[in-house]
Amino acid sequence: MLIQPIDYFLLVWFILAAASTLYVGIDQYRNNPEPVVMKWGFILVTLYMGPLGLLLYILADKEPRPGEHEDFTRPLWKQGVGSTIHCVAGDATGIILAAVVTATLGLPMWIDLIVEYLAGFAFGLFIFQSLFMKSMMGGTYWENVRKSFLPEFISMNFMMAGMAPVMSFLMMGRDMRAMEPTELLFWGVMSIGVIAGFTLAYPANVWLVARKLKHGLMTQRPQSEAAGGSKHSAKEEHAHMHHQEPDKADGDRGHGKDVHSGHGGHQMKTDATTTQVAALGAVSLLALAIGMIAPANWLNMTLSARDVGGAIMPPGMIMDRDTPADAMRDMAAADPRLVTASYDLATRGDQELPFKMENGVKVFELKASVIRWTILPGVTVDAYAYNGQIPGPRIHIRQGDRIRVNVTNGLPEETTVHWHGLILPNQMDGPAEITQKPIEPGETYSYEFTATQHGTYFYHPHAKPDREQALGLYGALIIDPANPADEVPADHNYVIQLQEWLKREGLTFPSMPMEGGQPNYFTINGKAYPSTDTIHMKVGETLKVRFIGTNNSFIHPMHIHGGPFEVVARDGETIPASARFLADTINVGPGQRYDVIWTARKPGKWLIHCHIPHHTTNNNVEEKGGGGLMVVIDVT
Ligand SMILES: [Cu+2]
Image (tube, rainbow, N blue to C red; front, side, top):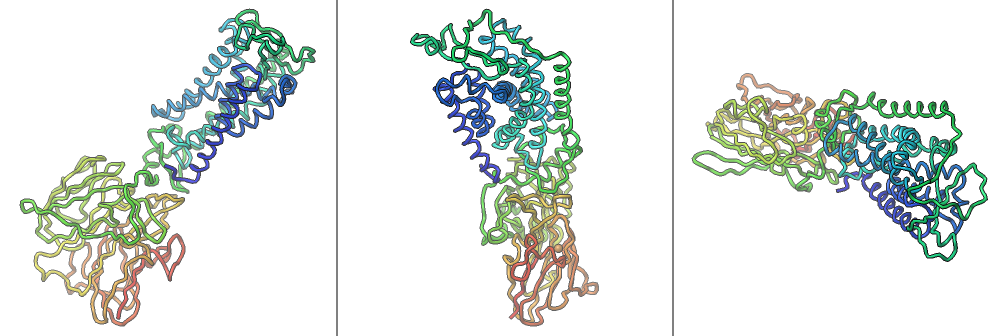
C-alpha cells in the first residue's frame, strides 16, 4: 500500500527503470555489437539507475548507426563509463543481494555495511571481472583474479564510499521503511546509492582505463560481418573482438583481431607507476573508511531492520547515535496499513457498553485495534481504539457490581488495561510486567473485580501508555452509587474526555512531551471544535460536567463561561457539602477527574474550553471562533 508521496514517486521511477532496462536489453541484443558481459553490465546498471542508466547507454555505448560502435566508443570519457558500468554492475549486484540478506537476518547496520562491502567486492572480482571476462581476456581464471584485483579494489572502494553513507543516512532517516526489502523505499535507497557509488567511482575508472589498468568499452562483431558472408556467428569459437584502447592510434578499426577463448588472449600493458597506483589505492581506502564510519557520528549504527524497520518517525524527533530502537518504536507513527476500519465524523465514541449477565457477573467485551477516526471534517487520525470508538465505550455500572471485562488485543503490540482509581485485587490492576504479563497481540485477558466505590473513573492501557493512550486508548468508567442519595443531582450530565493528537504528513504520531511529539490537534470526546457536541439547556437548569484527564501530556485549565461552577467531586470522591467550592477554571491534569455543577443563569451560547489558547486551535488554525478543546452550551 502506498502511504506517502515518495511511494508514488518511486512507483513512477521504477516503471521508468523497467522500461529503460527493457529498451537497453532489446537494443543490446538486437543492435549493439559488444561482448555479453558489457551487454549485461548496461542492463543491470540501467535496472539500478533507471533513466540515468539509459542516458549513459545512449550517450556512451549505443551504436548510433551500423558500423560506428568502434569509433563512437573511442573517447576516454566513454571508455571510463564502460569501465565504471562494468564495476558497478558486479559490485552493486553483490551489495544489493547482501543488503537484502542482512536486512532479512536482522543484522545491525554496521555489520550490514561490512557484509555488503565484502559481497560487492567478491561478486565484482570473482564473477563479473574474472569469470565473465575470462573468455575475452584469455588466461586462467586465477590469473584474471590476480590481474583484476587491484583495479577492482580501487573501484569498489570508491563505489562503496558513495553507497555506504547514502544507505546509512536514508535507511535510518525518518522513514525507516527504507530498511525493509519489501518496501519500494528500500529499492529507492539502493538506486540512489548506486548512482552515488557510480559518480564516485567514475573518475578513478577513467584514470584506470587511460593507464590500461582496466578495460573500457569493446566492440565484438560476429565474424560473418567482419569477414563478409561467412555464416559463423558470435557464439561460435571464432568470436571476433575488437578492444578499444583510447590512446592508441590504430589503423585496424572495423576489423579488429581474433581472440580465441581460453588460450593466448589479450594483454594490456600499463604505463602507471607503482607510486601512482599506491596513491590512488590509498585515497580510495580513505574514502571508503569515511563513507563507512562517518555516519556513525550521527546515526545509531547498532540498529537493525528488525529493530526499527518500517517505523516512520515524527518530524523534529531527536534521533542521534544514542537513540535506542525502543525510543524510536515508541514515537513511530501508527501504521496506516494496519487500519482495520474507518469511521466518519458522525460516529461518536463513549457509547455505553452493553454487557451479558453470567452467574451474577456483568461481562463486558473490549477489543483494541487500529482504526481511522474522523476528528474534524476532512481530518482523520490513525488511532488505537477500544471497540472502534474514541473515546472507548463507556462502562457504566453500579456500586457493588461484580464485573468481568474480556480484553482482546488486536494491536500490533502488547497491551494491558488499568482501572484508574479503583480498589481491586492486585492482579487485576493492569501494570504490564508488574502485576501481569502483557497481553500479546491476538491474546485475550479477563479482568474481574467488584466495584466498591462510586464516581467518575476511567480505564486506559498500562503497557506503553505514552504510546497507546496517546493514540486513543481510554474510556470512561462511571459508577453510580448504591444509594441514590449519594449522587450529587443535576438536570443534565456531560462527560468530557480530553486528548492531544499529533498529525503530520498524513500520519498520526503519539503525542508526548518529547522533541517532535508536540500535539497539533486536541479533542473532547474524540472530536475537535467545531465538531464537538453542543449541550442544550434551559435557564435555571443544572449541568454536571465530569472532566476526565484521559490525555497524556498537559494540565488543561478547563474553564466555563457564564459564571462559576461548584466543584462537587474530585478523582471519583464526592466532596462533603461543607468543603465544596466555587470556581470558574479547574486544572485537569492527566489522570485527574473533577465533577462540577454549573447552573445556566442566562440564555445564550456559553463555552466550556481549555484556557491554553493553543489548545483551542486546530493545527494552529481557528475555525468558527476556535477549535480543539471547546464545547458550546446553548441555553434557551
Ligand atoms: Cu489545554
